[in-house]
Image (cartoon, rainbow over all chains, first blue to last red; front, side):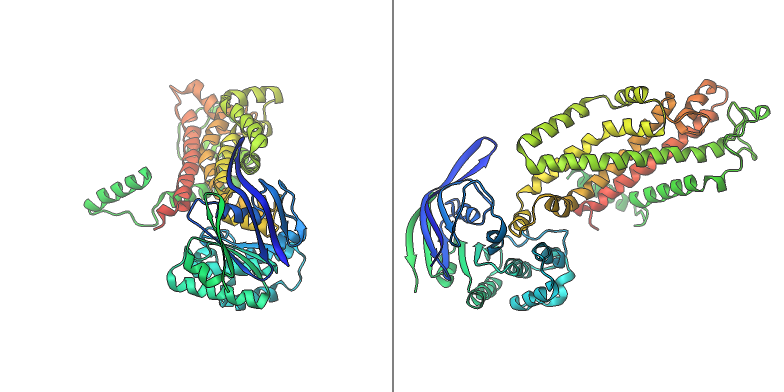
Length: 228
Length: 290
């Protein structure tokens, strides 16, 4: 089953009345359960593509089919689709709200969805990523980069996504922490039956993680590669 | 950066002279003590004042400061010390009314403009520009002359001309975080609309609005006294610093204390809030983290 199908998709950045098309006529498919890599030099449009898949940039044209339903260009995600697609951002120092304690940051979306057993879910999440539960009342600035990225992973997984988008999840971390986070993601993918789309400029990370990858160049797909 | 350099320089000079101010003696603490003093004196004015502030005693008019009338008396023989204490009340009430009105309005306008962008931003910010370009005391006078003099109308008039600076600042700060990763993350988690604005944007914009409010308070006190001086504030016989200066100015060459006493009270209050605001700004600035 194909979780994502892109057909002739172009994506633009719109600012005021200016429109700057960054991704041109991209077609690709991502199968359920695979780790799909987007590789390429900086400025090639891989992050733009990921942000469109995340529903954060609705300025695209072409056709996108995601989790079995067609998307409408210009519309933000809502309802079930919104929670089933989650993302881990590149910079763990910028992706957590600086004035919210972890408990607040992690429990707010669950409250919105009407869950009752929020505390159990939070402690389960902390266990899964290997963080001590007593950190839950801390602010993000009291955590290290690796710990923050683990929190960001908990945050994404708490909503039980089907698709996890990773925007260079380890590029802001040092080598030893990188390996830990990558192993953690691999682990979670097995356990949770996740599909992952990962952006990286590091071919080694993609080799290690992905089943299937494309290389982008100047906004177009350059080469496609399958790993076994 | 300039602040930082100046700070460094002054510290170096002080160090060279072998003299260092104790840590507790800083702008914030001095301002805080002055503001707290002001609040205590105003709220407990009946306890501290030796006379009824409105008690006229024509035999004792225009007395110089002595042991009975510490600050002297005015042209109706009213005790100036008591009147200055009571005069703190309308000033503080007016100032707090102005803050309560301006901060929420300014924040709302600024955050909505910054968050929604496009036409919403253009319309809201042009309105802000227009109000900002109006001469504030003149407009306040015009409004008071339409609405009629009084405490509430004075506050409304000053609030009307004071909210734009809050709106500008809030818009700039909202713009700078609008595309941040953590707001994108919140949107991806289904946090949208008013919940995002109040729960996620407001906490980041509020601290600097509070600092700005504290810094503005000094100016608002001066403006309030200005309204009082021109007879557009709270009406006599209620004690109010601005109108007290005004009545003292008629006898300023012979009985200078009648105008000087409320004048110093205005200076004290304005300085207190300025120091507090300055200190707050230093405290909130991470570069001043000592």
